[in-house]
Length: 239
Image (cartoon, rainbow, N blue to C red; front, side):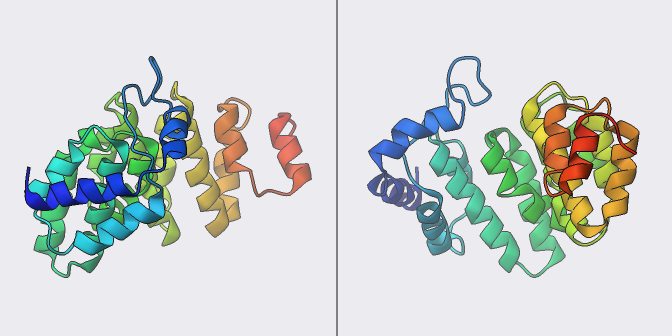
């Protein structure tokens, strides 16, 4: 372990809040049989993690980031994810972006809870693949691996915000009947974001699926709809 990674971990430990350390295991479902089983927590809040990441992202080496990503503590891994995002956003060249993307993909096994996924993939993969062929995301969606599947769906956020919906809709359809509610939530969230940009595009998808899609996905997708339209969709009686 390098001196810098030791300093980062020590800094995070110094910011730990015991009450948060007790709460986070329940919040992130780290008990036996839950999606975050075995994850450990220091009790550090996100703003403090971001401060640490911002202080080191320019100087830290990829090998040191990999050390952080292998840590047993959730907040250390999340801080490493923030470091990658901050670095990616400052890089200028295609070669530098590709190097970071390749590193991120090599470390996906450590991006292993919903907040690590949601804090990174659309900033990194979404940006990099905006105007590139997107078979990677269909492979991730087909992987039968919860976090990789969520990466596939949430990466679409970057494209949606820029008015590109086709891959998001195709991936939503592919993942719509997934067995886990974390994917239902991801699908519903991305559908809602599509609706924020183009209501009719979202409604076209919902008309096709609203009577059979998981209720969690539907509720997320229609969260901002007019109450009467929400009621019609939830009761399966769309006019």
